[in-house]
Image (tube, rainbow, N blue to C red; front, side, top):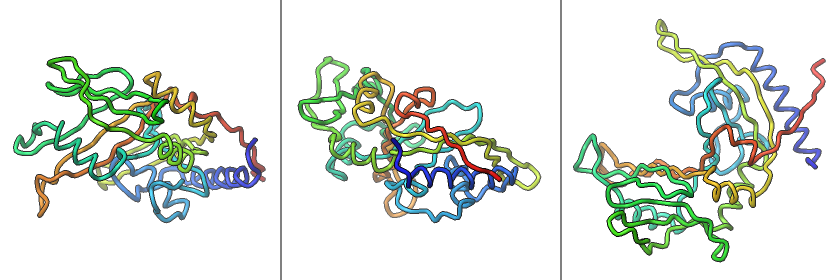
Length: 258
């Protein structure tokens, strides 16, 4: 059952979406990969706040470009014991950047299958129910042995982040157009679908099945006083868009548009 209060918020958001939809093409309020989402928030008159909280009255907003079935970033969460674990990961397993070999990067995607990400090491996600952690296992490619390196996310913190951020989700289809005359981007918000999180146990099962993966984006500062030092661009749990309905159930929404 959906609480009456949150359902009312969902109905309110759907009414607001109809208003935005009627605007047709709107000028981008932000650029880059998050431009569509940030523009939508601006159209909803919502100020940007902390990323661990839902975007709109307890509802997380996710945008995707129409006919683009890319992965959906669920939430970002560093390994336990931030910042020491992330710094250790970078210092120990990174490799020279192709653009500037003087500095290192750690840019990998891994799931429950062992993936050879560097010449020396492979990585794998493992759900350890006994320890109540999701482990990042590291293997030595030369020996095939497991490197004993306690890198993990606790069930407790993962569950809190997932349920705080994604108990309810609004998934928005967007078209994007670039105007070469004005050198500006425009968005057209086509459709919105609402979802409710199935549960944390399902989240863990999808990690085990290889359908949820983790993307590490550990880069380096290219300019300024910290040049060459770790620039942590985030560590995100992601799911292919075609698997979204395995983690969420759709919420049918009816509103009076009169």
